[in-house]
Amino acid sequence: MMNEQSVGMAKNDPSGAGIGLRGQHIPEIIQLQPDVPWFEILADNHLAEGGLIPQQLAAVRSSYPITFHCVGMSIAGVDALDMNYLEKIRSLAERFEPSWISDHLCFTQYANHQYHDLLPFPYSEESLAHICERVMKIQDYLGRELVVENVSTYLQYRDSSMTEGEFLKSLCEKTGCEILLDVNNAYVNEINHGIDARDFIAGLPAERIREVHLAGYEDKGEYLIDAHNNLVANPVWELYDYLVQLHGERPTLIEWDNDIPAFDILMEEAQRAERILAASADMSAKSLKAAAR
Amino acid sequence: MTDTETLNTSQRLFSEMLDNPAANDPFIAILEKNSRIPGQLATDIYRNNTIGTRKRALQAIYPVIEKILGALCFDKLANDFVTASPSMDSDLNLYGAGFSAFLQKLTDNEPAFLELPYLKDLATLEWLHHKAYYSPDDLPLSASQFADLDTSVRIERSRSLYCMSSLYPVYAIWQNHQGNDSVKEVPALTDEDFILIFRQQGHPVVQQLDREEWSILQSVDVQKGLDDVVQSALVDGVDIEHKLPVMIERGWLRFCQCA
Image (cartoon, rainbow over all chains, first blue to last red):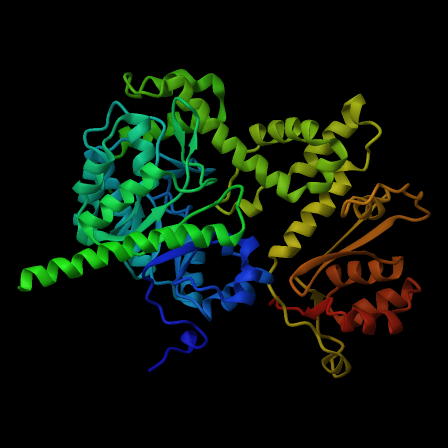
């Protein structure tokens, strides 16, 4: 039986290369209905109870599958979970039925001071036990598995006893959560810390990777900033190609948050990702045929 | 409950470092010493990110204040405000309400701002404009509902409607800075400036109120029932018989949802 909430919503099966939905593009998307397989919303930008924001999202949702990307759960935080925030996310999810909900492996607040930034923490057994407990609580509350994203960082802790990849893998094993693999973040960390991005990707449990993010960084000379203000850089495309060949196709998202360009530019980036996905599917089909002979 | 002593310490030191550049060293002491990005640079990156995010939020809410002060001056004030005012809600749209009080301290005490006494009220207008955009939807009272209304029933303002008053011509100043037209001279006020900010078809609209409309809206905020609003208006000589139906027609009022 169709859920009453589902009336007027597109079928929810994101695949291929989607695009991060941003406010300035929404009227164009509603009017022109571009050929995009799915959109991801920054859920934190859609918490308004009324007005244009929920109306526009309803219009987009009627034609496209969507996923939620969050920045406020403070998964690694030591402050109590912000139940008011989680309630808003849950209520938004009940209304718009995203295929999945993701947030970042970081903390965003301490002593109720909100930093609105993705802050890293030591990758230790102590952190792992604490974060497992929180992820389980969040999953119970949202009634679904959480998808957790690796972050880019500009520092490393002396007390870390494992890599981010090992940490994510253990977190998945202990909580059943899934991974949002941000390829740009993996590359930024390679340049900033010398962490081999291919090793990082190869070490992740393939079956737990639910989604992939692609974005542009800003080159500061000595280091890279995960600025989401640029085209996806060539080394990141190469890494993406490696990931797709190694782990197979995954729903992939083009993220662009600052100095946002015309929607056509994002479409071109998504089409480039689609070509890589198609080439991988073609290779897989040929391999299967060869094996069958 | 798991033990989080080390994690807690690292987050406390991180937080103190972000809030206060003088607290850099204890945080740097817990970082890997041989990192490619030196500790001092790492703390600068994170502090700049967190301050920059809140400054951009202020910039989005207060575009007219920025136009009047100029980009450099606004940036300096935003920096001072953000450094002194942590964000206390995960919703960044709720950040920046205190900016008008911050500006008032300047206009009251700093000689350079003496010629801009209206800044606080202008900031209030921009904050209410921002708030109206994000306010909940309401089902406004219809004319037919109003005609059948029991006079003891309580009515209230629509939740996306805000009003304010000022001794300065804030409406004209705000209006003057919409679009790219050259700034016109602002006429002196003959009465207080009564201003309404109300969301229509998704977009906040700013308009002036006359004293009678202002008086009715103030009365709606404090009176117990429609009867009281009417009585209060009659005592004050307000033409409620004509004004109230127009306000209803414009969707400014709704049934009170309070217990």
